[in-house]
Length: 359
Ligand code: SAH
Image (cartoon, rainbow, N blue to C red; front, side):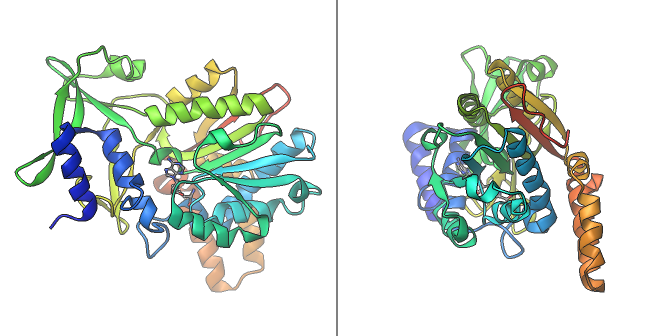
């Protein structure tokens, strides 16, 4: 039995032919009624995956310190926009705001803005962030550009759709999703145009059989964000899993109830992500005359901001069980075989006056 989202996809493929991977991701994640992010809160133990802010408050505290420091470096402007992209349950924003509370004037100057498309998650954010009266946006276009913007995004870029191209003996093909004999299958569509979209470094390395990814949605998001940061002399910080240098590789993955599953299984009920190509995004920033910090591994960033000392401080006031939890959370966020290495942190800022911490 197909679910309603699968029925929708079958109809679309019937009408228009096989579907590119980015179209598939957009529908599977963002269909207004049946999309994965639209109908549920996917985070936490009862959901499909756990993110760093859900692991421990320490993550948000470190990012809050980064934001407060940037704001002070900006000269403590009287008003600024604190924008979070893809805020999930609002946990990260709540922790960052709490951490920055001690910085005189920060809360008074700050207007919280959230870039979010999921109705289910907007409801959660409205609850967890009610003290800060946030404003929501579906795209960057409506974010005010008359005061400095400080922007943060954790596991946001990886949710943006990618296209995939495969090198074959006969040239490049686009990977697409077809529906044959009652099942969704991957197929190839010959690529007429020169694959200029493929990052050059990956294209040069690719051999027949290799897949290269193109994060067109992340690229256009980054272009728009750079324009906003430039207009407002702002800064941004992104944390995500990805690679520092473009390379061939199929990184599209599906996660359902904390387990990896086939991308074509549990459609609309599994999270779909692709690794972020920081190489390409950094180039876009450079082209827009931005300064780029990193990317560095998450462990290095969090340690530079003092997460080990913070864990010690929290432990000093904790009972034995809480101490153990704090230790485990610290490991989870910083150990190389957990989130410490795969996750990268990249900073972006405009103007010579800013030297964001942690890099
Ligand atoms: N940052 C949170 C949640 C990460 S999950 C955390 O770390 O816990 C990805 C988030 O991005 C969700 O809030 C999802 O609804 C949002 N999102 C996904 N695609 C989006 C898009 N195109 N525009 C805005 N938000 C999006």
